[in-house]
Image (tube, rainbow, N blue to C red; front, top):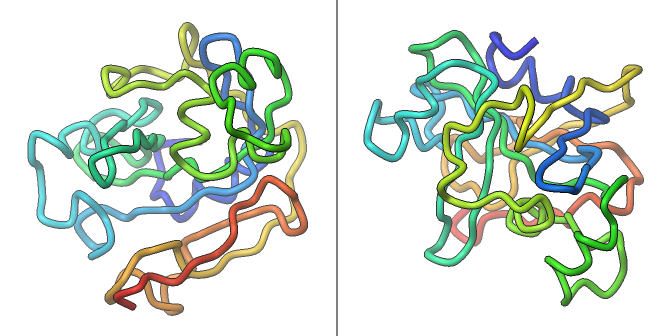
Length: 189
């Protein structure tokens, strides 16, 4: 399922579950990044120490530091050598609720525990040193959705320039789900 471009994989991840360190999240919102053909992708300019993971085998985490303060995670897609990844934007905690609450004590309601990429990684216990971690067992396991899920698509959150315009509907979400983050257009867009 993951050895395809991110824009094909992303909608298939909705409703899938990701388990990490005692918490399971049902994915409700994701964004596709298409590597060297996508100006919004970290891999747009090719392989760097930061993006090496995106060019690796599908089915691994690409984890990075964002804005100098947040850890974000992607699922690597496409065959090795072709950078492509799906950003994990939001989800519903379906198991390990107490542990997720401990990791996210500022969440006012449970729907906020994994709403947003940095909150989701914190709820799952994903850290920078989990970059390249496989998703086939401990500490992380990805399970496909048991049935297809209705989804919609639109522009990515906070991405400016050609990769962030409405012509790139690379954000996918489950409509009406309370865990989906609020859309914010890039301030530069």
